[in-house]
Amino acid sequence: MKYGLVLCLSLLSLTVSGQVLRKRTVKLMGSRFDITIVDRDSLTAEKRIDEVIAEVTRIEYLISDWKAETQVSEVNRQAGIRPVRVDAEVFALAERAIALSELTNGAFDISFAAMDRIWKFDGSMTAMPTPAAIRKSVEKVGYRKIVLDKKASTIFLTQKGMKIGFGALGEGYATDRCRDMMLAKGVQAGIVNGSGDMSTWGKQPDGSDWQIGITNPFRQDTLFAVIPLKEGSVVTSGSYEKYVVFNGRRYAHIINPATGYPATGLCSVTVLGPSAERANGFSTSLMVLGREAGLRLINRYPAYRCIMITDDGRVFTSRNLKL
Image (cartoon, rainbow, N blue to C red; front, side, top):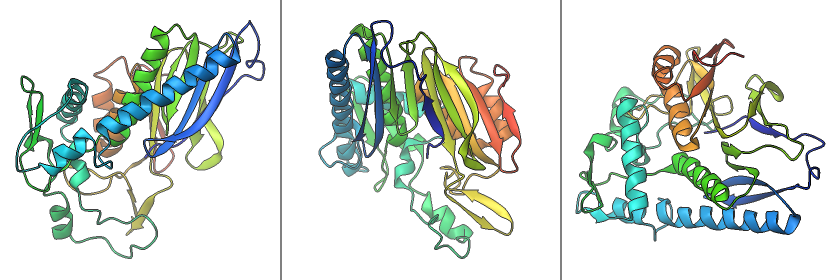
C-alpha cells in the first residue's frame, strides 16, 4: 500500500503569470485520485480535469479485476480453460508486468491476486499462520504459469483458480497515461496522483518546481523530506500503518508473492523516476527484497532513485540520490 506523499503548493502559485491552478479530488479505480492542472484559465483547467477523469475511468473498465465486465476479469474466469484475447493496451501492460516479475525474481507478481488472505492486519491475529498454511496460500501464485501469445494477443492462466490483478500498478499506468495525454494537448503543468502514485510535469504557476513531501513513518504529522520534481513520478510504499509483531519481529502487510511471508526490515520505500507504473513496481519489490537486495536492484536502473527507511529508523538511498 502507498502512503506518505504530500503535495506542497507554493502559497503564491494559484493565480500568477497568467496561469491558474485547479485541483479536484475524486474516487477512481477504488482509490482516491487528486488531480491538479495548471492552464490559462479556470474553465480550461476544469475541462482538462474532466478529461483526466474520463481517461482513468476508461482504463478502469479495461483492466480492473474487480469489475466483472473487464477483459482482465474474463482472463481470470477462463483460468485453466482457454486463452483470452485482449486489447493491445492490456496485453502490453501484462508484458511489462511479467518483465518486472522476472527482473525482481518474483518479488513483484501480477498473479498475486490469487493468494489466500491468511494474514490479518486488523488486530485480530494472535499467532502466525503455520508454514503449511503459508505454502498453501501461494500455490496458485506464479507469473511463470502465465502464457502470453503476442501474435494472437491472448493471455492464458494455465492453472485453474489463478488470477491476475494490476492493482496499484494499474493506478501508476493511469497516472502516466494522463500525464502524457495532457502534455500532448499542450497543458503546461500538473500532477495526477492516484492513491500515492504521482506523475508530474511542468512547474507551479509562480515558476517554482512541484514540491513533494515524504511523510516521516515514525511521526506521521511531520515530513521526513521535501523533494522538488520538474517532470517525473514518485511512489511510496509503506508498512507503518498495517503490520503485526510476533516474537519481537515486525511483519509488514506487503507479502512476498514467492513465499507467502510478509516483508520485514523496511517500513518505507520511496522511488522516484520517469514512470509511476515502474516506480510502483520497484517500491513494492524493494519492500519485499529488503535493503541489501533492493539497493542492488535499483542501482542497476540509474533513471530511478530510492529512499529506504528501516524498521529501526535508519535511512538508506540509492547511489544516485543524496539527501
